[in-house]
Image 1: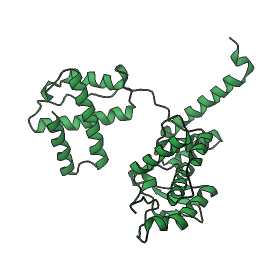
Image 2: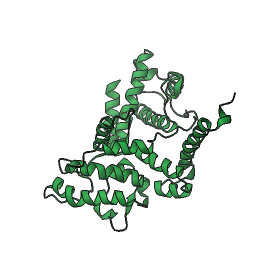
Image 3: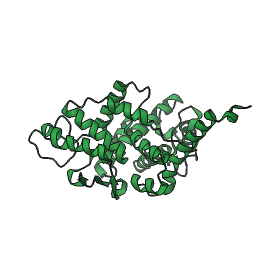
Image 4: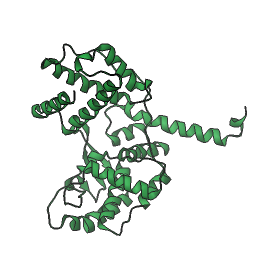
Length: 301
């Protein structure tokens, strides 16, 4: 069964039907599905019918305590449909069991974010006496200052940074461009990195990428995650921190302090206001929590 998965991944790579990220996602999703099939003692792709497909979606949806977001479920379904289309095309399956199967509608998951005090604690763990430390502090400060995605941070170019106006020109999802500001302190850190540390890291090499790794290449999203893991551990934060949490924190803290929802939508580059509105649930929950802990009558039974 594993051989068919490998052939499929080779097939989509050769056909250029998916990016590297898509292929990686397919590999993870199909490996997960294979584990499930082994758990229920199925050894052939021909044994997978609609009943098995529905059972697997129920499994992913939470019946087996494996709770995934709706977007992740839909991505799993998309990959499985593509895989079984490939099997049908090559005579390895009679029909596609995942056709016309949809992921159940679930509640939107509230985004994880850091409190402002946690952001400060995280950033203060970075040793800025080194060139790498200057880079990392400037980079993470900028991600929090401007609500950048990790991919946007990795792909940020020098020509898209205006230190005088303190703005970034960002090409986000779907190649949509947006302009985002950053506050003076983030600008100061970025300027110090660009003028002092970046030339040392480049060691004579020319590059238009803002953030450079130790091999003088662009700092990848995986590299950024590695650094964030390191500083989260050093800071003593008792939680898993991922790069998108800085973006979530950016949006949550803006709304907490009275920013207009549509302005936050523009800053984040969301196509739909409903995507941004998820952050209002976070701020309302925090307001309720503060209210219930502070109001003298709220504790009455």
